[in-house]
Image (cartoon, rainbow, N blue to C red; front, side, top):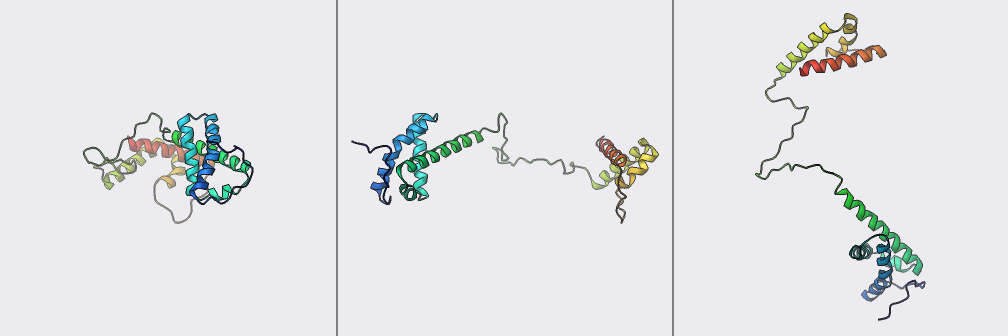
Length: 192
């Protein structure tokens, strides 16, 4: 069987029938397979990649447009599509392994029960709003005794929770630092 020349520069006619599609495929397949092999693919992966490129062209009805180009442009376009396809395959194969050595636990267990995920914002079981309010009040009282009277007067309007109708006065940098430290200490007192 004689194969047509590899770089056919004449224009190809309408690729609508099976014979024309087969001729187009047979004309470009060997070069593309060798190009994929030159890019580092093993022979089987190279064949699969070239077939995937032609299948995608056929599915998206791009074969007719490609067949109207001169032969060297056909080959350049096919090589570019093959290269992009191989890069996408490599990217997708790596994406599956991005989890590293982490272990993923399914939410539905083998016995059919659904694994509940606790959220740190949800109250702990057994805590009531009244108990939480009392612990906050106690922590505020302890913080008041720990801070200097001037520092307490500076941060109290922001910590008490009684919202005044008007806006708070602008904060100086010393007030912001004192407020940050007071809130941090208040969290520690509530956790304890």
